Image 1 (cartoon, rainbow, N blue to C red):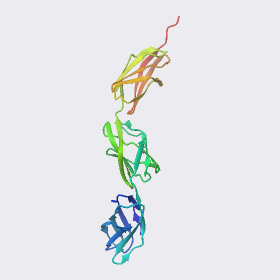
Image 2 (cartoon, one colour):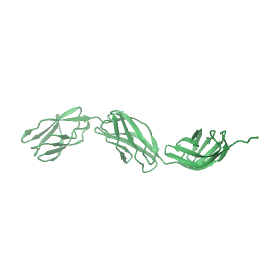
Image 3 (cartoon, rainbow, N blue to C red):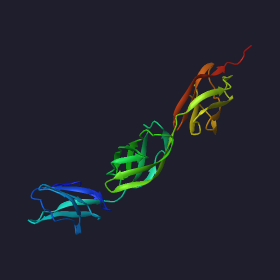
Image 4 (spheres, rainbow, N blue to C red):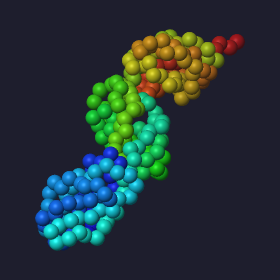
Length: 247
């Protein structure tokens, strides 16, 4: 006589189906000493709403013909989330984040706002999940659903992809050291600025401007790339290194 699912929340409310034979006319289903609410019954199955409980409960079905053999049902506590590895990312999603805590081994879903992703369970204390695409830039709640229930409490911020409009000035010596202003959009979460692939020190001025100091480079035009929590934007050949004079 199988029981499905065989685990559920300590708070009760799990819909459980018990299958077997001669189950018609079931008058009671016990989870240990507690009665479950019967919602459907046929000769081969009984569907119930599990009562609250803890640990392992022995489930029996009583009909006019007697009481069945017991089956085990395992109560699972609600999950606890301790940390979210990244609290922001691109609006397009696709990045992987790690959630740590306890009671995560039965995780079946992670919600980012209204969008759902299926996690990979690493252990009872760790799951990873690929962030789904967001509907708009901004913050959403993050919840984890397990056999023990749903736990909320984290916030994740979707960030628009950046753009780069201008790089001023657009020329400077190969020795570097040129102060440059980069304008664009969605630059407030800038994580790096590179000139021809070489990182440059930078300061975020606003969501539309970042200042940087050019690193040393070789003569010629190079790409300027700004990377933010929302992704990367490249201005091709936007800065030209000039060789110094010689006599």
